[in-house]
Length: 114
Image (cartoon, rainbow, N blue to C red):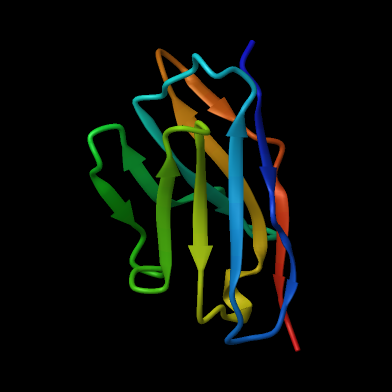
């Protein structure tokens, strides 16, 4: 069973930047879609950014222009670069992949606070 492992969460001040990374446990795992979801306290998990294996990117309106998803094919990893962070970006961020089924990471906490 392929595992997804996130890294890079933490505490950052408003206006700051943070980059999350996701790595698949198997180098032969090539997802059709990879991306990130987040879940804030008391709210449903929501998609943040998606990237298809042909390079198509999609972002939620709340992060468009501030977050960028990218992929390192050689390392089979993908990242979410976040800039101009706001308190409302505070959430647990989950790495996601789809390949004949959905795969999820364990989640990493991002807290935006002064």
